[in-house]
Length: 274
Image 1 (cartoon, helix red, strand yellow):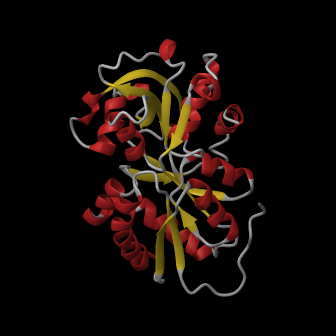
Image 2 (cartoon, rainbow, N blue to C red; image 1 turned 90 degrees about the vertical axis):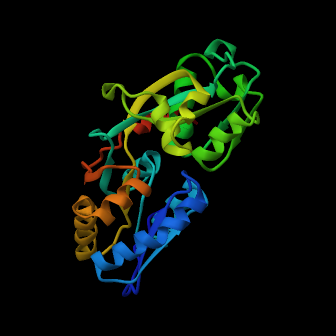
Image 3 (cartoon, rainbow, N blue to C red; image 1 turned 120 degrees about the vertical axis):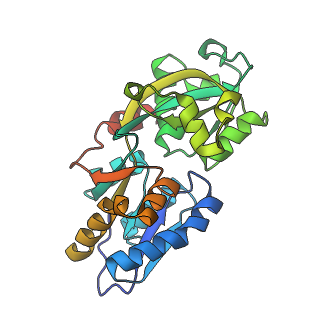
């Protein structure tokens, strides 16, 4: 799909959110984000929650969205097509993260015992929720399509983790901090399901690291709007409301300017996951 450059004046600014942390939660917080961006941009703002990562990417490429909070693989795809990623999230001082393959605590599941099991993933374009673990399994000689008797895509980390807890799947994956932080997969689980829930899962393996989520902007977006959006994102830490948005919507402590072509490392992951 070729990126479309919208023509004519824009009457509103459209910002897209992914469904990865649960669409109901995202919709509840979308109004807060819209209110913040309206004040920062001086424009009517519409915030919508995409039904899938694929939809989020298509909305950006078609011009139906002016900017979005997008997972790394979507950012990588956008960059490869000439779309700029304006900023990326920073978590615990780091601009990268990894994925953890997990099963239900006490299940005794290991990589060697995966054959014949079932998996629950987030989305085919989710880096930590599918692409990284899928690529990792292939490097271990475990082709997911042959190892798992069934694979489902739940649309969110919450849905995937709950599928394992409820016995509808035996393995899933979740984002977690890089090894250098000293934190484990339980941090990612508890970011999604709440404090103490990490103990209900056990680790199978960690993957390589990937760049954090970012904010790509549509081609043709007027330069003053791009500048204003960048300033708004980088300035979120300056107020309690902004800090709450960082925590509740972006699961980040701050934004930083994204380096040009900073997501190239994910092209290998994308190819390995085909």
